Each structure stands twice: as C-alpha cells, then as structure tokens.
Length: 402
Image 1 (tube, rainbow, N blue to C red):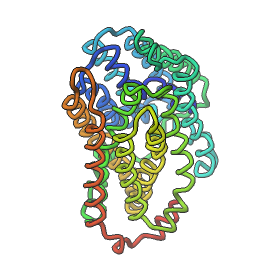
Image 2 (image 1 turned 135 degrees about the horizontal axis):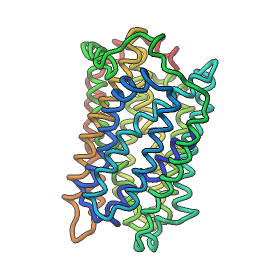
Image 3 (image 1 turned 180 degrees about the vertical axis):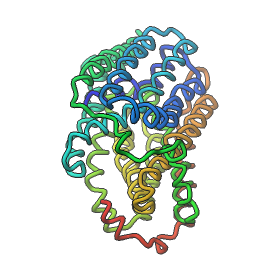
Image 4 (image 1 turned 45 degrees about the vertical axis):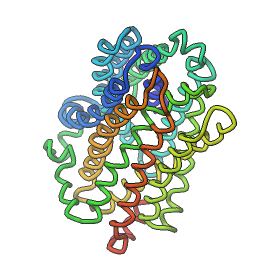
C-alpha cells in the first residue's frame, strides 16, 4: 500500500510543473495529460471486471501492470516533447487506475475483519504519498528554482519507475488472491460501470447531490492541475513538500468526519466541504510567497475538509441510499461521475482558464483561482437551496455506515 501511493505521488503532484517548465506545454496540453486519470477511471472497471476477476490472481495482474508501468515511466522520463510524452502518460493511467482496486482486493483477501483492519493498512498509502513529496522537496530538491531551471524535475519519473518496478516484483510474492469468478455472481458491463444503480437518480435529493458532485469536481481539478505549478511559479520554497500538508490534513479530518456527520447531519457536512473550496481558492488568489505565505499554507491544509467532508460523506450517503442490492454499483456510478465525467470536464476548464490568463509567459494566478472559487460558490448555493435533508428517511442507516 505504501509503494502503491508512493508511485503515484512521486510524479502526479509535480506533473503540471514538469510539463510547463520541461516540455513547455500549454494549459490545454497540461489539461489533456491530467485528463488521462479520468479516462483511466472510466476504463478501469473493464480491466478489473473482464480480465482480473475472471482469469488471473489479483496479485499477479497487479505485478504485471506495475512492471509495464515501470517501462512507461521510463519512457516518460526520456520524452523531450509533449507529443511523445502524451501516449505514454495515457497508457500509464489506463493501467494504473485498475491497480487501486487490485491492491484493495489483495488486502481484503488477507483480512478477517476488513472494516476494522483495512484503515490501518490504507493509512500507509497516505504515508507513501507524503514521503514521495518530501523526497522531491527536501531530499532531492528537484522542485527548487535552481533544479527547475536545470530540468531536474524529470527525475521524478525515474523515481516512480524504480518504485513501480519494486512493487511489480513484490506483487508476485504477495499472498495468493485467486479469481472469484466461480464463486461470485456474474456481472455485466452495465453493472460494473454502476449503471444499474442509475435508478437512484429518480430520487430528487440524490439527483441534486449527484449533479453537485460532478460540478464540484471542476474546482477540484484546478487544485490537482494548477496548485504545484502555481506554488513553484510564485517562488514558494519546497512546494511539493508543503503540499503534503494536504494529505496530513486529509488523514486528520477523516477521523473527525464521523463526529461532525452525526452532530450536524449530511447536508451541513457537505456544505462545509463545498464552502471550504470557496475559501481555499480565495486564499490562493490573495496569498503570495512573502508575508502572505500563511494564506497559502492554510489553503493547502483545507484539503482535508474539502475532500473528506464532501467526497467521503458522499460515498457514505450513496452507500446508505443504495441499500444492499446496489451498494457496489452505486459506488461505481458515483466514481464514474466524479473521477470520470466531473474531473474530465474540470481539467478541460482548468486548461482553458490557464491559457486565457497567461500573458508573456506569466500566469495571472489571482484571476485563475477566483474562477474555481466562484464556481464553488454557485455549486454551494445550488445544493443549499435545492437539497432537502428533511426528506432523508435513512438517517439511521447513514449513522450505521460510519
């Protein structure tokens, strides 16, 4: 689990900065590169459902995918322009996104009580992501102004290549996790994509939440795509290391979420998450690398509230609304909607905005950040005025879920 997220965090956080400084990519090209995550999320159910679950042990296909990933990472490391880089990053994300489900499957298979044991294992993924960022900023200093000028940030792909190779080899020595195709019920493509749970959208409140989840992914995409280039461009020291504050915050607020959920309910919890996006981007718009650096740090630290209070709460709400029959399908549907459709739209919008506010090679970051902040305001108002929590008939079910 540590290596799974170390591999991802080793290059994904700094991808936008690398593309801009090393490959001189435009905003729309950067958006295209980040959008590969969404395509990977859409394609992943096919790989898991049609191949992994039927023909191979999960640990074996996990190993094969990471070995192929190591090769693609090396090819990204060697790329000299965006046109040669893009096919490799597209191929990588298509094979990497399924590994997120596979590593969970391997974990669950070895546990007697996943509900109690999994969090202890999963937290090592967050630690892996944090350590990758600390390595980039404080050990190798690849994101320093001097290193960026020398093009050393491309070494992140070499680090990811080596760690992916290690995880690929290690995977073949993990405990066997055989296919469940014989024991499990048969699922078609419609079910794997979560489309059989689409009937949940007949519920007005769930439809409002569903649409809000897609729309709030537009501001989320701005963070993933622009935060690291923004911090590096305005001269913040060790930007990648500082961004790990967001992962620490995510872990802490995940622990506080059940308490907040029970005390204030679903609607207020979701709204707090939405408003946190508004505040975060306002802080980014008016912060700087000088006396107002604290505003940037607070903005990064809000990541826990932004992500946990909206997306994790939404997963809990979806689980409760779906009921036993559609639990898995409903989670697949909300993942497809957010990481697939929502993020795809978000990256595209963020790319257009970044290009629109680029003058003589310098971004107008204040204007760029105020746009997702404004979008978050509109989504918050839409949800607040249209979602009726009084209609929730399964509050007890939601409380049981957490």
